[in-house]
Image (cartoon, rainbow, N blue to C red; front, side, top):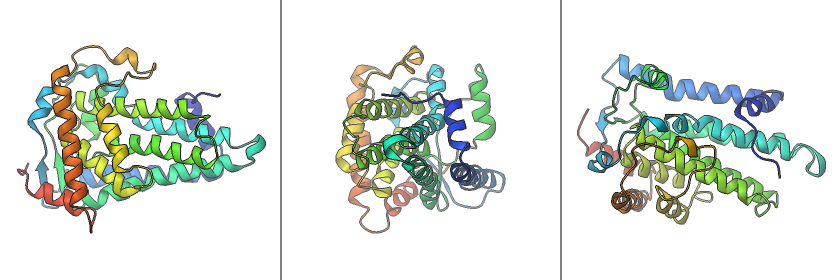
Length: 295
């Protein structure tokens, strides 16, 4: 069984096909227009959507650990590797030309996450306390490019959850769910590691995680059901990282006694959002943000 390609090779495999190249351009356009530009405009011209402070006391129980920055920054390469694998595996031999269609669907649905999350951001922004750490150049890039006003829901978590669930759904449709289960499990473990990393580098609060999981259940409940959300939360801070991430798991870690409290809070907040989301899916998140202190 072939493994996921390296990030650089994955990009080349996707961009070398005209249809996937166009999909990639649409993705980049969505990232700019619906994430960066919207935030920059809000930061430079205050007076638009209100900004809520979404920190929770449990965030203080998760130590700041800059070693996790390399895992955090892998969230884009994470899904690109999966998309390139689909193109290669299903683009020749017995599968014919299905690879391009599957990879294109994967890129398209990932792109749609930005517009879906913007339904909340455009009406209420949010932020968290973020240390200004300057000892690692990777943090310079984050501080320089991210105004940090789009925390609820966390797009980082939405993207990695979508990656493993969408991949699992597509290979199931191809009749290869069992054959490729080890790769799906690897994507699941990477998603957990990246989610933990966003907490360790203080890019998000535990509240943002719950909001992201709720958003994914409303984005496509067939891929991310409440049962799957519970499985994801119960695996946080307790699942060994995949080999490629293991070297960055040193340094300060959340204490074992705090893990059940963190999981219970995320799961409980997720359930409360789900219970209040019968109509407009954004209303539970917007109502929650309105009740928080203003930044």
